[in-house]
Length: 427
Ligand code: NAD
Image (spheres, rainbow, N blue to C red):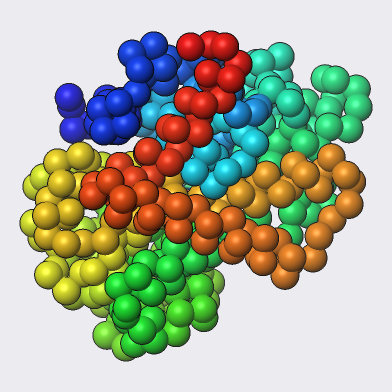
């Protein structure tokens, strides 16, 4: 298995869980592969009059529990295997939170930082035109992910509604509020990450006040995780790291008495790149991109990309670290996962830790269906209840089977999906 192929990693994780659970051969085989996938080529007129052709994908991994659900990524290194892995993890994510949804994912191979606003709009609309016949409110519902914002969701929604000739807000989530978005969707993933950290600290009998955290990333998930780590837990965030698209490398921004997420957000662009000069002027130390990983903190929160905690990097993690909260999808390779388990680090697996976003996306679908919208505190209360229940189920299963947390999470999720497959008579 390649450490770099996220889908091989996702299949390996499932294989491990299938063995522990004694999953039958047919169900195991069915759950190892996407049920449907669409590959598209998108000709887009650029501002200079020329045409660029972009590749895109939409993967519907498993829909036994309900319509598939999952974000769309715009990324220069997007591959079909990344999208398949993310679609598999979405399947386990919706199942572990107990949502009546399956798992899917989409992606376009592009570098959005090099596109003008009008090129980005044409690309977003072109992608929606190609996938429109493959998705739908009760078929497959996309949402934002890396480098796709509520703005991108608005263009895609408008393109879809123009094609079908009616309003269909439930076809895509993560929309701005005036177009049928849910209160709290933008910050939901980061808030959910902190809810799971709160529960893990309780299990470890550690008072959250006075704890420290280090975060990789400073985009949608990381900014909200930083805010909530400070506001909800009373902890300190010592540093964040992010990619610098000008220098084409990552940096870590550190302050000994803790970062101010509000200030850093005010000097960060739409793609999560912090203005280095503005941060230095405000007294931040600018360190290597991977310095965040080696900080003496209680909690590490990778909230950027896949494959960052590997056999090579895991030994650099400080012995002080008690919790690894996977805000990102797939940040830890299986070898590193074993190492962390042996070292007694409490790993909150990605598809539990970052499930707050899809949970509020599901609430958004429910509100769209009723055309009636909830207040922010109701969204937060319901999300907290679902995330805490998911955390409890995983913790209890992990203890009962004496396995790694990730396997506990897989056992809960796979059992729910497998039961739905059986009830449908598929296996
Ligand atoms: P984003 O595009 O808003 O932010 C990504 C951040 O990662 C940026 O700050 C970028 O500079 C940083 N980054 C990229 N490469 C880096 C590197 N090599 N080193 C350090 N930083 C780097 O994306 P996001 O929506 O915050 O998503 C982050 C992760 O969380 C992804 O794995 C995504 O799949 C996952 N996730 C997102 C959501 C959501 O609701 N947005 C939900 C669940 C999971």
